[in-house]
Length: 291
Image (tube, rainbow, N blue to C red):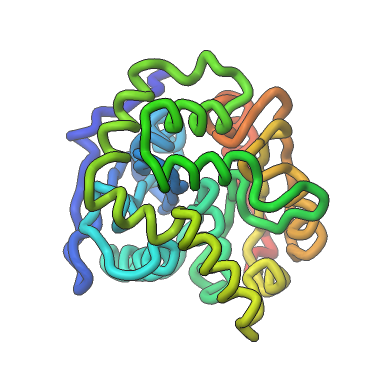
């Protein structure tokens, strides 16, 4: 089975009032939007290129590149906030009233927030780590701390340390992966935007703002999600420890959890075949009572 598609042949662009959103499109049928995570040198293409061909055999796959990560136009403000706005702009621009969504890490949080705010627009939701709240493990996790260290002082050594925290099997971190991540992560504008989110100063400021806010955090509103939801997690995730799944597993109305052994944060990469089988079975299942 073909496991990769061509970058240029799948590349698309959507003009919005806030700038150009770039994305990759493959396949036909019901829409499936894929949202990438955060971190140095991340892109939607790099997150999902290894599974996109398989998913596109069943769905019209749309891999959105969030603004501020070096592919879509840069953004003003916090990258997480702009990612949430970008999802609505993207669906509106493509004329999609309702879609299934897969979100990795930060993308999973953005997808979850979107499903809370606009439940009628999400038919099914799949998250890959990230979406939840630590119950037993320290917060932030090891991987987030290493990410902050890199963002404060970007060196190749710190990038490699962070990349290794993302996986169970260190063989996944190849020289090619390191080099492609390093090139984008150190691009000046991309690095400047990353520091709005992951510098130690920005992270501390966000924590203080959360303590002072009377807004209900997203993880306390999971019961508002009406879509069938599949949480996928690596048992050995050092970025978003698996105990973060306990709260959503309890509060989601129609939530399911699948944990993959010997697997870190990049479940769709490190447990590729098992993840694909699980996710495709979930997405293709007929949920007759779906909202």
